[in-house]
Length: 188
Image 1 (cartoon, rainbow, N blue to C red):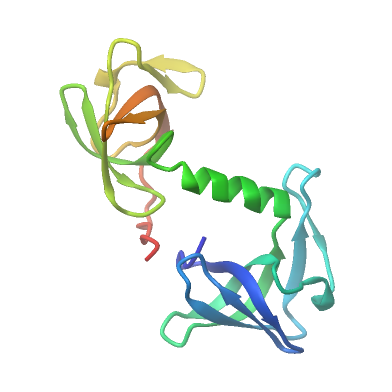
Image 2 (tube, one colour):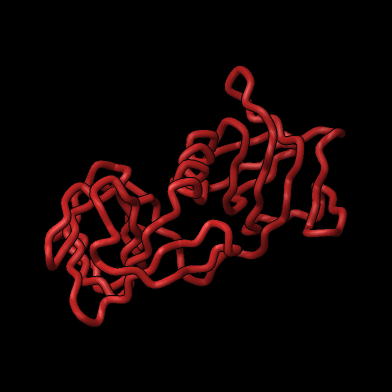
């Protein structure tokens, strides 16, 4: 949960009248400037991902926030148009999910298909991964059943399975779609 080109997400380490200081998951420190036109929202866990307005004082040290606005990656600043305070339970779930990436699930764009092995560029970190499929692997496109032959280089997929002895064995492979028109920048 760091810089993705559209927002900066991190844990609040300092609160001031006109800004927050956050630490991204990669340890970078960003200053998030707040002004009278900044919209402050709180993620509502029990409202299907909805959001409600909050006051600047509702954000405290230890909270996780996502800031959308004018981002200067070199200066490590954001002039925020919108700040969303994440629901703590959702943050916990996301961190657990990130910790399991490459162990129980993978997602990304297919770069090669070689027999029963699929190679992807990971959507979480931009690194290359391979996973194997077998006769027990199920292939799906929402509610449709697919086969390995239906997948093509460039397709975006999500694989769920297990990592054993350095080999990711896919139990399910879900077709997500075609790649975004805007390239995803890896999180460094």
